[in-house]
Length: 245
Image (cartoon, rainbow, N blue to C red):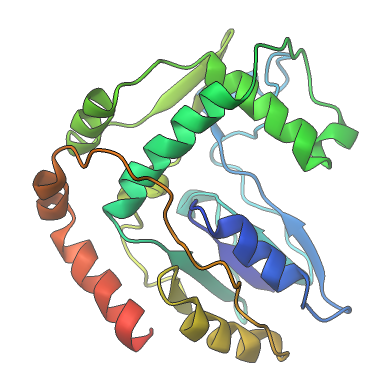
């Protein structure tokens, strides 16, 4: 089984598209979603519009390719699996996550969502609308408050009606260890990353032409503090971006 335990980023959808558009036809694939329920008993709640699963549930096993943004606690790895991830710059991604948060809250007008059907979960546009609705019920963060709380190591949650969702910590703070990965790629060097993926899937996989990894262009509030917080992670990231895994 090939598993892409992803981290969110501007290029994540483009990376997935590039893989799926070139994946050998005999390899099945599926996506595993990434918000977590704060309270596991909320899974059957009709207000669980994203149909997120309890936080300790492992992903399903089958012979194919599984991808998605999910925590290490849900990784269901077995012998002979190949597990990889592609990560972004530890500090730049913090600002980019804020841009994503604000975009999602502003992009869509209010819309009442009572449930997401199986068909809607298979339709990214409809699922995106449900996610946007959840975000619009979230707290209205300023850049300053958001960065201050990242520096405090806060676990971010968001609530829709009586259901609380938890953002996985890896989105903000990265993986505590990369020992469970067979390969770690870089959003800042997709050429090198896709050379490796071509070998994994045993098929040539051109990397995305659009290689602008980050979209945030605003104020870099407390940049030095973030760089100090993630100094070891930055060293690791610079190494794999230049030299590969």
